[in-house]
Image 1 (cartoon, rainbow, N blue to C red):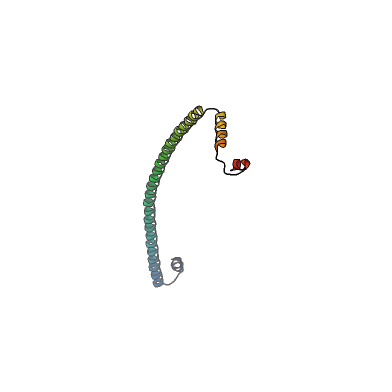
Image 2: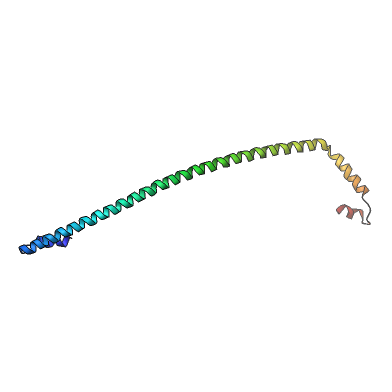
Length: 133
């Protein structure tokens, strides 16, 4: 394109001048057509990218909403589990307290162990080995 312009500016015969002018005009028209085609291509790309951006924004917003919903469900689940664990802990503590209240003193257990050892059948082992087993 520039070569055509450079050659058109050099003085030549009138016929060459008209031919060169015609060549420059054609080259200019082709350049304008290429520029218009590139512009249209860039517009099409831009429009396609804009549509993709809108679609991705909608998908992103949907994902954010779903994540918030999942988080809410997990918080609810954690709260329910914590409540159940507290109930279990309270029931376990109450049962342990009732068991300790009904069990009696440690001396009663010692008396029962001593009685069981005395009533154990004699297997022919010495008394010290029977206590180990």
